[in-house]
Length: 205
Image (cartoon, rainbow, N blue to C red; front, side, top):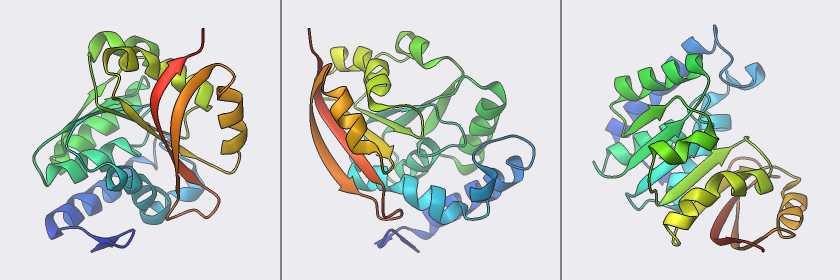
């Protein structure tokens, strides 16, 4: 199976198929994502989410903020399962969504765990991480506020954020309060979207 032009193993494909089946089943009763995107879950969500792992395949410790329907956190956890290394901490305060995430991780044997807490409270439960991801969660400035506690514990931390067509406005706005280095990765799925890779993040005094 190809995922964004890259081969994945049969075992990984089976895990992803199992996850999509679970996602579509649960989405009938709880609002995991926009209803109009459920039928096209492979392209709109799985392939889009997989870009994060494909940009950073090193088996480190991740935190996925506002995991919702499992994108990209569960997809990263499934892709990590093949190497049997690394871990994803999924932060989701909505208890129904958290229950779905636990079920998805368990049934796909993915490498992750769920933290049903507010993002602001997560640093107390998750001490250090190597990588951060978030998708359709908040503007960059707010994301940086969320990420800062882990940056202060790990200066080499890298963050990966999916962003739509207005991402340049968010970058300019964030630069008024933050210093950071940035790599822009054009989306392999959505023509007007990017994945922003952020590092060397530091709040301006």
